Each structure stands twice: as structure tokens, then as C-alpha cells.
Image (cartoon, rainbow, N blue to C red; front, top):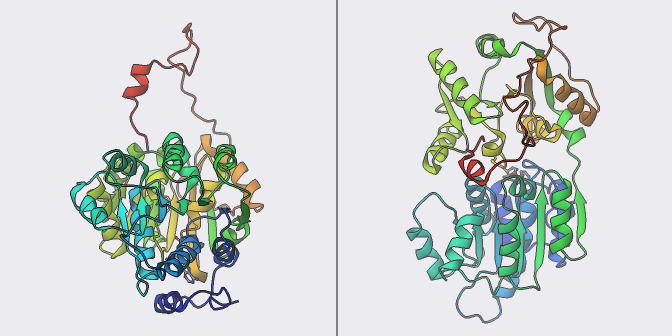
Length: 413
Ligand code: AMP
């Protein structure tokens, strides 16, 4: 099936051709007709499947067909809410590329940078707005954004949005838009809280699922190293010296871990960039740019910071820390071996991460091959290091935190 079979209009077909896409991806094939038919959809698909075009193309089509009717000033008719700034920018770039032969105006707004340029563009009028929740709500409160004419609302990476604590913001944004609208919800995973949100705000949605598990394992070589936690950095250096080449994305669970590894690799002469939740917007964009342009070949990131970002043509992904959520493993390794090319995923498992391997393998339904001949093997009898809880003996229930201590809580991603 081709894009023409999806009944897309010529200005979009032209842009698609210019992008070099020859045929629609699975998620596009399933989602585009439903969106064009005006249905609400819940699509579970991860980044790399072509999901952005799956909502951007039909939205551009719906709006551009309506634009032929006489119209006054431009008002926001499609609103795309994204959890992170990088993802928002990326979605914006896609809309601009696909919509370049239409008359529609798109803009992206997010926090962490000055409002002024964003306000200037908004006052001139846009048809499509891509926004992170905080800045959107801020500018709406100031009366700069009006969502009364929104016809399509997209919630992208809904699971991440909820993980990041945006549930109330999302509900508020839904309320700021008219009741009668089309909602498209995209999520890499469908945990209960996403289902619950969908149940509250969507109407008779079509469910679309693009299976990632089997495809994840297809083009990607996977290898597992059992290694003591204290030797992970040495193992990483050993692999970088002897085995892994090209552009490499290394995942760590926390920002502290990212910084620590950056220090170690830099000391050993590697050119490294990092992204995590505590870096300024400019620094994150700069780091990504350097990585994408090939100025550095190693990027170290936390899951949350790297989620949704389209970094293509990766040669290898290193899971320096294994993720505790098995789906995250699939998202991570799915970043290599894209578009039919082959890639490698290296995973380091310490004594306390063995359970994660079990759940990941259950999800993948394959056993990840183990590399045993390396200089830092883990003693098979090694037990996880258990930290004695400081709270033991406390009369207070574990997990109960004062408001003040919650406020002090720093971001770990
Ligand atoms: P996404 O999942 O939206 O982040 O897209 C991942 C990558 O796939 C992006 O670089 C898109 O430009 C690319 N892409 C999207 N649709 C297609 C298609 N039909 N054919 C080839 N590449 C595509």
C-alpha cells in the first residue's frame, strides 16, 4: 500500500516524496485512515515507527481541506502536547517538513527559554501549535493562547507525560479546549494510568497497536555482559577500545550516573556529550546537535531525557544500567538498527540487576546471548549489595514524606 492509497492530498504527497519516504510504515497505515475519518485513536507505538507522521499527515490534511473555506484570522485548530522540549521541537520540524506545500502555519513553544519570540509568533496567528504543558498553560493564563477553536488534540508519549507528573496539566489542557474535538493519544506503553486517562477523555477510540517486541529483536544484535557494578566503567572502556565503533548512545538510569560516566570517558580521551533533566535547554540542544552532526560520537543519557528523540543511524546502544521496566529496554535498543540497518545493543548486568534480565527476556520471548569471555566476569554466586535502610526502627511508615521533604526532592532523571 502506498501513500496515494491512503488518499493523501497532493501537497502532502509531494512533501512525503521530498522526504524520501517510499511507503507508509505500519503505524501510518493503521492510524492515518482513522484520523482522516475523524475518529479518536489510541495508538501504542514507540519512537522510530514513524508515529509522528501518522498523526501529522492526517492533521495537515484535515486542516488544509478546511482552509479552502473563507477564513478570518488564524486560530489554533490542532494542539499537540509533548512531554519534553526536544520532542516538541522534533514534532514541529516534522509538521513543517510535511506541511511545506500547504498554507498552514505551525509553531512550537516550550519552557526554559524566553517567552517573547514565542509570543510574537503566536500573536501573528498559527494553525498548529506544538507545546510542552507548562509553557502552554502559562501563556494561556496570560491570555496569549486561546484554545477555543481546537479541533484536534494530540497527546504524544502519554506514558512519559504521566510519569513526569503532568496528569493534572493534561486534564486541564483538555478542559481548556472545546468539549467536541478529536483526540489522538500516542503512548509507547499502555500502563493502567494511561488507560485510565484515555477512558476519561477519549470517545469510542480506535485502538491501534504496533507490536514492537518481535521487530525489536529482528535487526538488532543483542549481547549481555554479567559484570560487577564496580567494573562497569572498565568494561565500557574495554569495549570502546576493542569492539564498539561509530555513534554510540549510552543509557544510565540517573543523572548522577550520566555525569560520573562522562567524567571517566572524558579522562580517557573520548569525546562525549550528555543529556539529562538537570541540564539547561540550550545545553541539551547543543549536546544533541553535536552528536547528530558527528562532532562527538558518544552520547550519554537518561531514559527520560532521551525519550522520543529521533537519533537515527546509531551503531550501538549500551545499556550501562539495565532498566527496571522491560519495555524501556525495547525502546532503548530500538534506537539502533533502524530502517532496516543492523545495530548492536550491549547490556551490562550487575548482581543486583539479574531480575531485570528475567523480565526483559520474558517480554522479548528470547534469551539474550551472554558474552562470557571478557576481562571483568561476575562471580555467578555474587549476591546483590543490600543497603541497610537508614529508616529501620523508625516509628514512621516508610514512604511517608513531609511536604517540605517532597519539595526538596531533586530530579533524578
Ligand atoms: P518517529 O517514529 O515519528 O520519530 O519517526 C522516526 C523516523 O522515521 C523519522 O526520522 C522519520 O523521518 C522517519 N519516517 C517516518 N515515516 C517514514 C516512512 N514512511 N518511510 C521512511 N521513513 C519514515
